[in-house]
Each structure stands twice: as structure tokens, then as C-alpha cells.
Image (cartoon, rainbow over the protein chains, first blue to last red):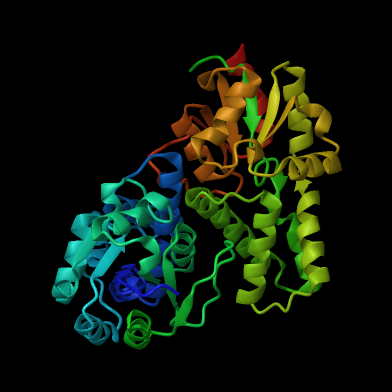
Length: 227
Length: 227
């Protein structure tokens, strides 16, 4: 393996828990928080892929909004505009996984440049990262807004290579989303899949270079490979 | 609306029922046929979109095979290679919806060219259509194999326009898949969404021109619009 010269993180589902919104969903729809949150996330992802393929990009906030609109109709949730807005706003304040702040601090101490490369808009990324107080840990906050196509399109991954000025095979790309890890590996990054909940890796003809169960395992992995 | 000069059908889920495979699934996994069939179909679709976005096209049979492999691991089905093969072969023999043969015969009598435009490979399309005895009803069997990218990419829809020699807005595109109807509408077809089971249309910024509850309603619609 090449020595690692920088680390690129996915945001949604990797550093931050998209199912943070489940508790607010539960306040509006008791007992259904996780169901709603999971279907919403699934539809949000589908819409990013479909819009990219159709050549009909829209910013992540709109896709998130549209996906909630669909789920609301499908599940007959009788979403008021107030509830709809409150739930979408919650997506701007999702929480990092518990082990993330300490892991980032350790990586920071190792001196490698750290980046987020996300399907989120610039506004979404900044909101989430600021709200968690973790902005000082990142050298780059990169949004697919700049290329108007979502991951796993190569143009999205290329953003990290270009902005960081580091060749793809010297960058470690870290994602919990198996489809994202697959796209990143196909693009040419060295890839670490974060598998917190014993999931099955997707069958897209790619395999991650590393698998960890949480970000707490990352400093040792990076320390060994960048030494 | 422009007069209709030809009709283009989606295959999987529109003319033919993808959940035909559920009964064979139930033979191997009693009581779980529809669950397995639905998850398998969902993953199959995801993989067509993801591979297209990654620029890593593989034929529909392989994607179907890979999706079953994933579902087998995720649901811990202990799929033997024999069962795996039997289930994938069943996808080559899925059945048309009950009203389809009579509706196609009526459309045929109206004298418009009829086509299938499918994500299936040439082999898959021919197998399914031959097995059902409906091949004589179609003038064109068009596979995305020829453009190496799946729907809803514009290049896939363009195949119908080019091969049939009919402008997109003179063609009626018929699909039960809301994402496919959306992509086709975005491309410029006149679109009819077949909504057999009171589904919710996807929020991708598009709306179908017509909505019917089954193909039995199509001859009247086409007759009126091509007159």
C-alpha cells in the first residue's frame, strides 16, 4: 500500500448519524421514528443517484425535502408544512457518532490533512460540522455542489484529489456507506469501510482495502500506513 | 398533446411481474417469498443506478446475480449455488401481468409500432418475451446493452427514438416504475404511468402525462391520441 498522505471522510452515516433525526420523527409520530428515518434516508439516496443519472442535479437540501415529501405521502403521515420544515432542519443538526471527536483529535495530532467530501451542499456541510463544533478539525469541506453530480460519480471523488493536490492512491477515503466505498475504490482511492453494525458489503465488483468497526480504530491504521 | 406515432414499453414491473419469482423463492424459503423478491428487486435496481453512475456497467443478468448474492448474505439465506442459479434463471421466465396479452393485441390492431426498451440484456429480454409467447406483438426489442448505461440515463431513452426513427415527443413511453417514468419524461417522451397498486409517484421534479391503473386502459388512450 502507498503511504497515506491525507484522509477524506464521507459525512452522512460515516462521521454523523443520519438517524439522529429519528428522535424528532418519534416526537411527531410516536413509535415510528426509526421507520420514517430509514425510509427517508433510503429515498434520499435513491433520488441523488437518479437525479445524477437523469442529468437533473438538485442540491442535497432539495433532494432531502423531496424524499420526505414522498415518504409523507406513501406512509400517509399528513405532514404539515411546519412538521416538514422542522424535520428537514433537523438534518442540518445531525450528531457525530460518539467516538468521532476523539478519533479526529488523534488524527489531527498525526499531522495529515483531513477533508470531508460529501453529497451535502456547502450550506448543509457547514451547518452540520459547525453545529457539532468539529469544524477546526478539517482542512477541507468539499461539496459535490461544485461538480453538480452526486457520488459515486467519478467527478465527485476527483474533487478531493484536485483540491487537496494529492494523488488518489495516496489518499485514504473513509466511508460507512458500502456503495460510496465501492465508488471510491473504483475511482482509485485507498478505501476504509467503517462497518459499525455488521452490515454486508455491496456487490459492485469492488472491495475495501481496510475494514474497521468504528473511527476509534482509524488513528492506529493511519499511523501505521503513513509512518 | 402530439399525436402518438409509436408506443415504447418498459419490461420489468410494467409488462412483466418481477415478483413472479416470489413463488420459487417461497419453495426454497417458505413464508419469505415476497420479502426476498422485494429486497432482491430493490437491490437490483440500486446496482443498475450505482454501476451506471460509477461508469462500471455490467449486463443485467450479472447485476441480478450480484443483487441476489448480497441479499443472500444479508438475510443469511445460506444460498447454495444450485438455489442461486435456479432463482436467477427464474428471472428469465417471469410472467406478464394478466391484462397484458389482450391489451397488446388491441394495440397491435391499431397499427402503431410497439417496442420494449429495457434495462435487461438482449438475452434477458428475448428469453422473457419468448417464454410468454408475446414476441410477435413487438416491432422492436431494445436493450440498454447497446449503450452500456442503464435507465434513467438519457442515452438509454435515446435508443428508442433512434431505432424507431420517431421523434421523442411523438412516442408514448409506458412504465409502472415511477423513477423510469420520471426519467423518460425528463428526456422528452410523452409518458403514461401504470399505477396498478395505488403507489406514490416519485418526487424527481417530473409528472407523467397520463396515469392508468392497468394496460387494459391503454388502447382507448392511444386510440384517442393517435386518431
